[in-house]
Image (cartoon, rainbow, N blue to C red; front, side, top):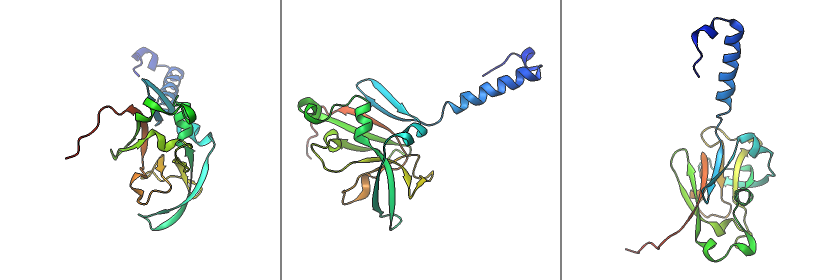
Amino acid sequence: MRLPLPLLRSSAAFAAWALLAALSLRAEEPRFTITYNGRTTAWAPAELSRLPHQDVTAFDSHEKQNHVYSGVPVRDLLAKAGILFGEKLRGKFLRLAVIAHTRDHYDIVFALAEFDDAFNSRAILLVDRQDGQPLPPALGPVRLLVPGDQRPARWARMVVSLEVVPVVGAAQAP
């Protein structure tokens, strides 16, 4: 933000300009987004923390210890972004995939049906707390927790967005 030089000469004008600059920086805090059908829905960390959470105790194979994780079911976030679940998740909607994008480019793909209670009895969580504390910067601000996976390779850290895309064509086996 550039301010004309004559306005900077007044200390009150400078203070007002500094306040506006600080507010514009604050407005750009990282946001978690879901993109579906040309529309993007975004949540600031504070907004995510106010949504209903579920707690899960799970073993972290990297740290070799159990933690209590708290997060929002991804299904709930996908529903807020316009995804249909239940009886309406059929036909062409079963060809939708959810790509989890991370800050370190460790992107992961899920079938949309994995998030639906009618297809799966587990809740995949977007976690923002571990053992009652916010996630450490190396893991957060949010990560995916996929209970029941035999290998936690899809427990993505530093998740920034989910993208719901149609699967077109089929890959050919080598």
